Length: 324
Ligand code: F6P
Image 1 (cartoon, rainbow, N blue to C red):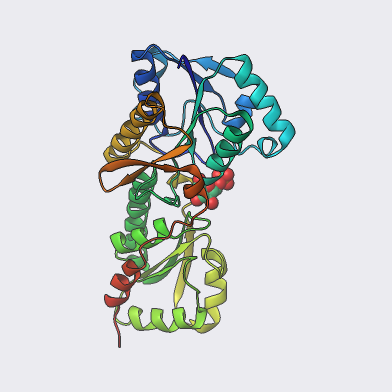
Image 2 (cartoon, rainbow, N blue to C red):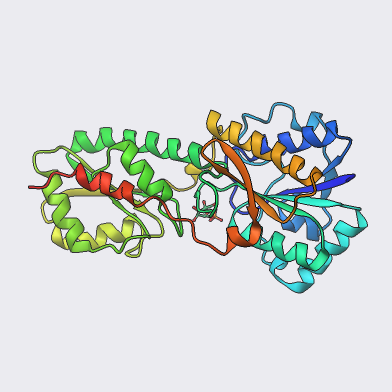
């Protein structure tokens, strides 16, 4: 193996740089040329790349975002787009391909490996944590901590003004960030896509919880079936006369920032493990983590199953509710 192509793709996630760094350093130490394509699959289609050096990855372990850039490529979903990508990978003698990203990134990689017969490894990097087969994705821990810090701040102002806040967090299809940040921030309620939301029930519950309290926080996953925080607030308003309520959408601040120690360690270990796996002849797999243990599972399995948060955590929240 002489050359390994690397991309970061989909939404960026804190820790992607730590992962790129680990891949590059490990490759160079094994006399493999790490080739970084810019802006995900777009760079592969447009042949926009550079051979990465130690210098390129110095002092990036602590940086958020991704030095390679990222993109959600529609063109790569087409046969024509992939043909251009395959031609470039062939022209550049790329022997294997490592992609860091989410579900969509892996689906693309899996099709690529079928059409080109190139060894491919996926590394889960998304703040959503919504990848089947791994307990942790790169960036999730940092995002969770960012959310908890933001909610703590909102709690201060909510308490000062005697308000109820609906705080929208990211997670289009999955409630990992919402559910776990709700527990960690002591939120009174959480609305996630995995559970049907009954607005009237939420209102009644909020009134119970708010009795004698100066503030209440409801964490809303952006993918909730009743909508985001703004929609939920307008739908609940008719049932909550006399309450002062606000919404806050945390948005992309959740994706930026310095990766936590956990994400740096996870990303570094996963990056090194990906190169090691390729050298051991393992391919078409995703790197996952169960507890502290790294593992591989087929990309097919990872992309054809749904990741669901541990719903017993919802029970924890319910059991802490004021019941009368
Ligand atoms: O990367 C995942 C994610 O942050 C989701 O939580 C969110 O729905 C989406 O990306 C937003 O994507 P974009 O920044 O492309 O609008």
